[in-house]
Image (cartoon, rainbow, N blue to C red):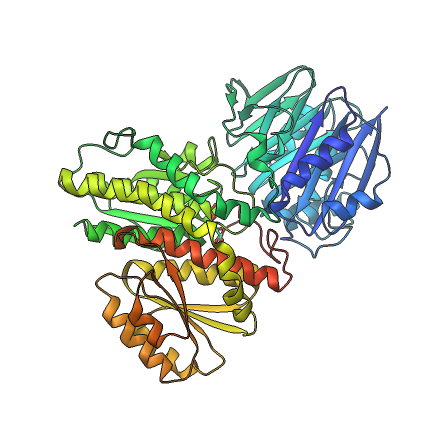
Length: 595
Ligand code: F6R
């Protein structure tokens, strides 16, 4: 949700800002801009559209200090005026912002009364004017005073014509400082820094960092603070497309690796599960999983995994719904699942649970992300950077953690535990097999693009998998897709089934298989085309479905990992056939940092 970058050093800032912004485009891409300072003069260029378009029009903005922004609009439509950076009345202060200033209307009214001139509809524009208002003894003091008047959430980077320093501040929105040699960097997220440094400082809420090319000084609520730097474990190559047409395809293909790496982090080659950071000494805790979007669907799969391993004390809730509920009992384990570690709804929900006495556990992909500073226990998935807006490999890696927690919490015998762990190791190979033959899915994906509505069905553990599959079709291929537990069709959705409403049915073998076949027959009786996903060698299904996509044999418990791979690929190829901007779907951003 908006990407911020900053540079201060001995090189021209413009190329660095542009390159870094491109790596943050997954956070928003409706407008963008940069500002640099040279010889006490501010140079600004901003426009509607993506960075590549800005780059074509951008004049050379000289200066070795600069800030940049790629926007996901919240206040005011995407337009050159609403694009960041925003300036004060005298073009001496430039600000980029990620988040929402809740009291901006009030501040704006007062600033206008005091004579400040506003140009945009954004909430952000109050910030440079507030800084201007408090400007007496220099930028650091003015920024420190101004942020005290802001309510809401923000990460900001500020540039002034007088002082040669970058100032950044954060409250409930991510921002990291990258450390270089006689140069320093600022970014909303790590991928923007990978070209330049692997040493970063994660700022805490209410921190302000004063950055020159030589040093980074930090204050926390006005007092000097020490924040140690950390080494980023990701490599630059991981944040590049590596020959794939889209990040999404690359990331689907990285799924076996994400599964293996996550597994290897907690399960040594021959051993049992170790190092899982979960509360100890609780027998049969109540567990509540919270998340949004794909992470929520992963949590629904957890429910089935736990159930199958004999543990029923687990529920899932959408994080934004939990916020409005009465909450949890003291001592409940609340697991927040969030790839980015920055999703505002999930953070808010976890905070509430923590205040109610819950033991909070975060499952995330991003080291140092906000959730890691909020939760009591942290479990990292090892998926590597996920750039495409649509979650893929992170979903698979989240499931792996679910299996490991379930195996630890449920009283399974060692035979069952070893068997499941072996299945998890094998499933990475099966996913790879599917990926090696991914092109076979192309004709079916093309067929699906002929329709404007799509249904997906499954039963049991694969029901959340069709929910996740439907989300992929909606978000990247813009095909309206609805997912149901197969048994629910007859309670309403059947009314919509016609010859022009195809149904994708997961029919891999488990205890639900026969009922699923019955559902398919019922659908066929209503003339809808059925595309079944079935285990290789299944002869029955060929007789009733119109098309069958075969998957390698795996244990039913781990079948979500193979089945989701097929659905991801189908959605990807359908989106490609439709010419969609796969990595940057309309109206979406990867990191949803506004509640
Ligand atoms: C869907 C997707 C989103 C995210 C959701 C939560 O493909 O990517 O639905 O899953 O915004 O994001 P995280 O996991 O970062 O909290």
